[in-house]
Structures are given as structure tokens and as C-alpha cells.
Image (cartoon, rainbow, N blue to C red; front, top):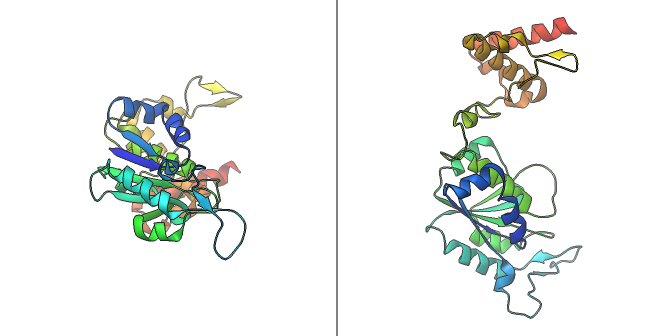
Length: 248
């Protein structure tokens, strides 16, 4: 997969992507990430990329000409017709389903805005989709772009050491993740649940599903439609809630 990021801070993007799973994916040739700086497409001595907003108000707005030229330059390195995505607080909330869909694309172009935002005409003429990583405001689109790239990279075949990680991790089945434990068996007076030491793989899978259902119900009930659960999952959720009630 090839991704191009249009950004005023290309070093910020490149440096962050050198590490971890994304860095290894690039080394293996699974993922290629390039950057394009709108400042390279300015014509004045100061490389001006922003200006005051029409109608007044605080802050500056990114100018359309250098942005459009940077997008065109980055798009020229990608297959024709690739998706163009702006990272924006006004965009669609990023979900695991959207990540998986984007991971099937051959290439993506990401626009990381700055300051008060991007001239609306650029979004109207150059962008296919606006994406937000949450209901809060950041200083720019670089961090959201990195979040999106990281999430997509995990879905690419060969990027993870064990492909089961992408299948079992949080949100892959619409549920939060179950609790994880490693050695030692006892820490701070708390022991690893005995079922995880039993070697009974069926019992372990049942426990993990029960914990995932219970955590989702307690922490993110908006993700779980109890009425839509099959009989097995409904029974496991009820068992989890009964155990919680007994403990308290």
C-alpha cells in the first residue's frame, strides 16, 4: 500500500513512522509513505501558505493554491482515482470498520490541515472524505494522519508478527478487548485467573469472550446491542454481570 501525506511538517510524519509495526511494514515493502509540503508550491520569498479568514476572526486559514498544488503533486505519485482524505474535526468519526475498508485500497492521499483550518474550496474540489479521530481539537492533522496510518498498517497482510493479533484485538468483533496477563502468576497480591493456567483452550476462549462482552457492556454500552446477541453471548453476558454482582 502507498500513502502520501500533504503536510506542513513532513519531518514530524516521517520520524514518527520509523518505529514499531509501521516502521517494519515499510522496511518489508508492505507499506510506503511519502510526504508533500505545500510550502514547496509557494511563489513568494516567505513561502506563505496561510492568510487571514474572510469575515474576520482569530487565526489563519491555509490558502487554496499551495494546498491544491501539493495535492496534485502527491497524487501524481499514486494510482489514478485513489481516495483523498482530509483529517478534520468536522469529519466522520473514525471506526474500525472504516479502517478495514481503507486498508483494502491500493493507495491513499491524506491531507493534514493546520491553524484554523483549510479553505473550504479545497475540501469541495480535492477531497473525497473527511475523517476525525475524536470529538476534540488538535493543533493540526498530522497526529490524526499518523493514527489512521497506524490503524491501517495493522490490517495489511504481513505487517504483524502473528496475523491472529489483527483478528483478536479490540473492536475487531465489535467488542472491547478482554484482560491480558503475563508472568509472574502473582503480582501486587493479585493472581492470574486460574482458567488461563488450565490449558483448557475451550474454557479459555469462553472466558475471554465473556470478559469482552462484560467489559463492553460496562465501559462502552453504546457498542453493544444486548437484544441482538445470540443465546450463547447473552448467557455469557448475564453470567459476567452475575459474577460482578456477587463480587460487590
